[in-house]
Image (cartoon, rainbow, N blue to C red; front, side):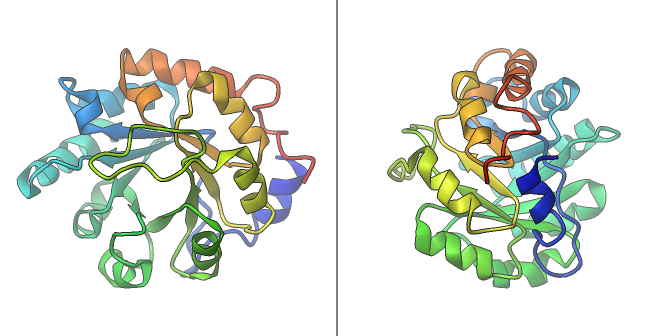
Length: 242
């Protein structure tokens, strides 16, 4: 563990006695639309087999029934693996499937506030929060219900549909955020194998990838991204300058 992360690990979680999540360097988003026609359960199984430890299920166009059936099948696909499953937006289903393997809920700025989501999901599940500027990051850092903070988009991206993408914040914003929060910090937006090491070196605990994971051979994509994380500048000793 780097000097920076050793200093933040003890006090870097949210409230409720929840342990700090063991994210791994790659936070993979299993986006149903980007993966199509590959079924989401098959994709998440490939991600876990490649060694990904954090997977978020995202499906902006699914119906309620599709969400229910998709989460159930995804939990079965991940049974026995080391991967932690997070759900995008759906506090109700995160609570319903907590006993089946869902470990976290991720919320955006337009979603349910973390304080409103907490009574739904309970004290054991992690809550992540997306932030795009200094004010939002400060609010997430101060919120005891937020266990993980996402910053971005780091680079220009077209992955955020149907909503238009937020302006790119760049690597400097990761450095700024890392100096101001002890909570787990992940970076999202336009990250591929060529950019991943720089994102981790800037201070992110994990790099979030959607397109670089979902388009093409999912297992090979994940192996390529994990190899980039293990390369010089992208490994465990990445934050010693902080």
